[in-house]
Length: 188
Ligand code: GAR
Image 1: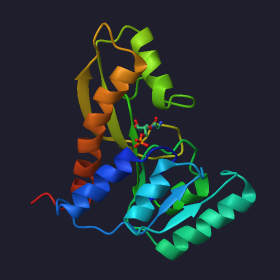
Image 2: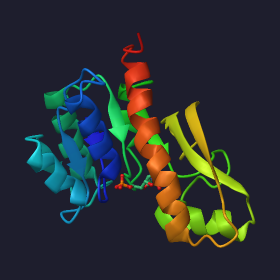
Image 3: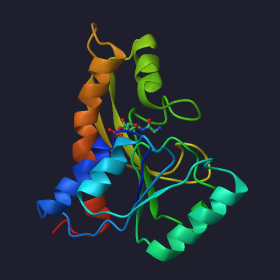
């Protein structure tokens, strides 16, 4: 199952990989914290169940989240552009079963506040010549879980956050399905 707050292009990349028989899996559901998330429409287009949890992080939303996870009982939880912190009790209930994709080469440019274009702006401002994406396990600290896979791209001198984001995103769309395939032991 997936969590996403945004357009859901990474979510779509995994849907596509499943449809193309590159990965054998069923996406049980999508949780989002935003009614406007593009990922919701993508889920509906593919008959994937959805659950919108507003006020994410509040006690009542934590209960809602726990109940939903009990129903879906996922083997793997994928954070694909989800911008809220997963509650600690959930992280403890699913050890080594939650992964996240981050649009930079962790451990640099990670942690609270580093999401989306903020990450790319920080990379450009720091004068980095390389960036990329990281897929990692989720632990109780933001962006600090064990790294599973990284892909590297060049940062061009004329890059804006948008042009860099686009280059990184196209690597994300390959890295995320590849890691899911690897974790589900379908590499042979
Ligand atoms: C992706 O670039 C993802 O790495 C990033 O949000 C974007 C979501 O795009 N995630 C973070 O910044 C998490 N800290 P998408 O909705 O098109 O998949």
